[in-house]
Image 1 (spheres, rainbow, N blue to C red):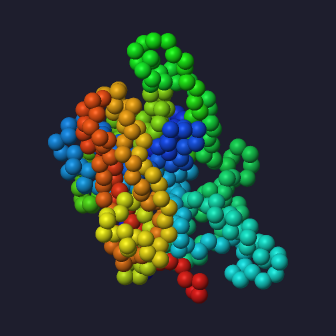
Image 2: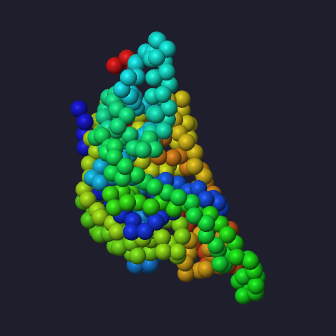
Image 3: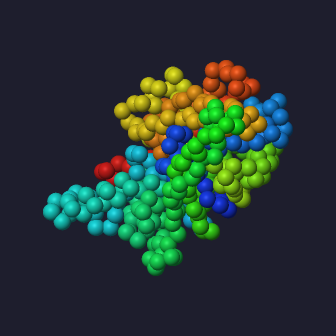
Length: 364
């Protein structure tokens, strides 16, 4: 038996190339998706521009968002958890004995290690504790996506998320001579860009605290309309990251809580201090991410030279014991007071969307 978890899905169809920064000074290698804390902060910033900061915290606490995951056509993909899903490829024996079976098992494990996203229907099978069985032609070209259907095999028909690193020149390197208007040498740098096709893009989920809170949903739509023009990601001032969005009702079939053994997160998770012992228990699996980067305050140009405080969060697809009852927290990453800017809160969301699931049992 299962129950239905209800969300709103926001599809982002980028009209230009886009860069998802890792938060590191080197832009030559970015991320393949947009993190949940960046999405939430961007919407909060948009609401402050539209309505002022008086009701910001009410807006902030009214909903949660997932990170942005890929979609291809009408098929949406979700992150493969770090533990608990059983994935088997055709020809992979449950208990390899012969040399051929062992070789096939090693090859299948390598494919599983590259598999970052599962289509919604495959993901729901994993939530129920079922074995996910795949054929080679269900994988994308780079092996990171698994579809419920077979992918086109002819050249040019298989949709991919292409990206390339290009060389750019920073005409305002940010040094004192440049700011003073004196002569200086332009600074070359490398920038990784994604080039989504007409069939591909990214989407994220919105979970309202109150499912009937249409006022917050209207504010989210207003924030998205502003962000469509401003853009998302890095290098927005260079014409990148502009998109159109659409919002639709979305559901996931998940186990009833009394049957779940574990939970996984669809957003970045920042544990409360008293959650650490439960989150880092023996039955979990997680990956750490360092979050920080430069301040993005377009109204205060000098402030963009400052770096926010850094914090570690747990990545999407991390797995925890369901009984731990984890919540997470949001944090303020404003740096120490500086004469360069008018200080204000820099909110980063660390309260994720958790999904309960039944971890696969090898004996079943």
